[in-house]
Image (tube, rainbow, N blue to C red; front, side):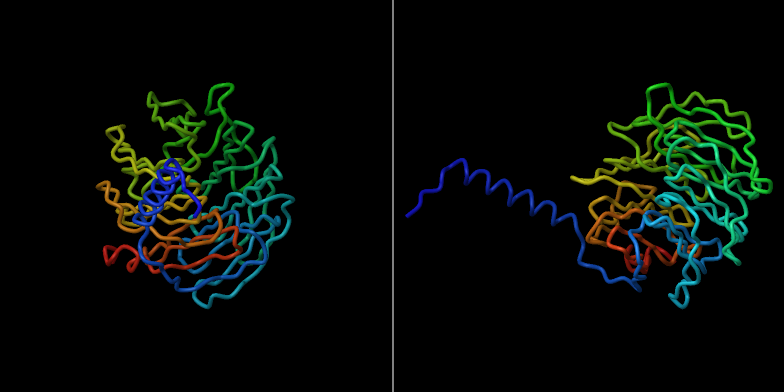
Length: 328
């Protein structure tokens, strides 16, 4: 009979306990409403303002447009020479901005699939793109450490600024719903900038580790930031409202429901976490994909959650079912 050492028994018991705790976090397996099979790895996801079209940025240099009603592919937008890391529809839904690892941003006519402008100037890959509320201005952030502000009609750069100190890597940006404030993350620090003057506001929000993604609530009251943890900040009071830990995982995508009540986080481990913004309550957590999730979006009616993954799928989920009927 083989003898099992006491330290091994301790280790085994510890591992079993840890596994039980991790399993306890997860809800019952969920079934998506639909799964849109992609020909390439997914790098980003965005939904049109009318909720009819989903744009999927891929790691094969292309953008796919899908009809969310029929679940059919509409067209392919080709022209980038690198991963399409960031997407944003214009407020009227007629134009799509795509930011790529080829250091450019392209503005596409959604109806025709033609390129309207190619925005050049960034010297490293694009991390974020965001439209102003009137659609006349586009804000872009890249790994070259600059935020650039563009005229969408002419495709010309209006101005630029560096939102992080020298030696601190820029990671992402988000524009407030009123278009007045740009939130920028540099490693573990979050700073707010005046979108008109490009002057920093005297506010510093901190994480313990790098911030990967930012998202404002649609009502503009809250700002969520995520990395190893998800933090929700009260924009008016300028303080931390809640902090949600992600055990042994890291978030790269964020979205908030139209009523600003739920924040959705998708992680490198393929998990989706849903939290109540007004409290620190987790309302759902489940395994959505077998590989890392690179994009997440919520339809404008608040009924569906979309997740895009390196497993080459974009999945649609019934949000009201996920949160137990809290969403109308």
